[in-house]
Length: 305
Image (tube, rainbow, N blue to C red; front, side):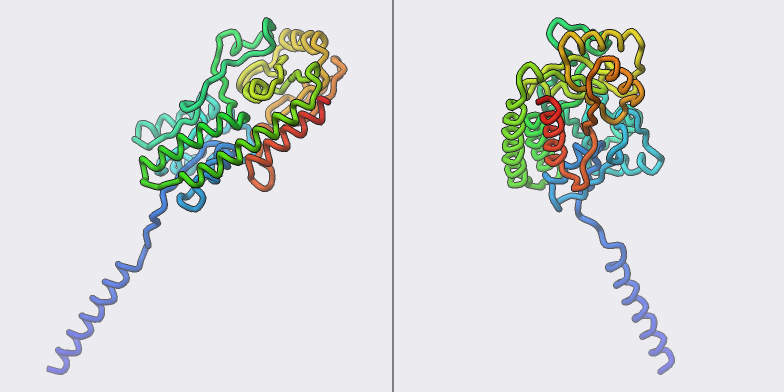
């Protein structure tokens, strides 16, 4: 009798422990996971959501976002996201296949370019650089360099997250908008200090279109006359660019990630201009969009005065 009672108690204890383990094991993470394609866009998303969502950036900071391709693990990360935030307009060329796969799998995707005023690629008025993107009026994906565009994206993303996940980010969005207004005013003041005749830009590829339009600069051309750094450089296009540099009395050639260094140096030497490196897709050590934009503006302003 006592033996049977002992066995019964042992069984009850095991059942109790098993019940506790089921309740305590593998605690669920209630936070939604937002996967962002680029580090610059990711910096804004992180400021917007704070600690209310988990934010992961898929393309490592500093790599060429036009040509980067995902690994199997990266693909899995994207397919398991609660929300994907992409730039759009072909900016993440190497990710297009995986992003389409995510769409087919019904993963929610926020495309930033859908919420701004799209600008066509172009250079100085009546100047034709030989850029096929300019000829065909291609949409420019480099809008993150315009704080006004980032404000629109911030508002739209906050609304999307509230609609999808019932997370209210209005306070964060308001704070971020104020910071973007301050940044915009600061950049305008700095660019205004450059003599108007010097506000002419030649870049590694067509990356400063929105920046130029927003702050009163003029685009003369690019070493890679395309929206993507993956395009090839031809001798005839470089000859056109050299002529434009001389005709417009350009002072500086701005290079960036993906710019062929030897080509840039040779062109600068032949044209009698200075090569200066800028970061249009690379976040600084503090990971801040605002620091990146301040550094970019300071470099452009200091070089063109």
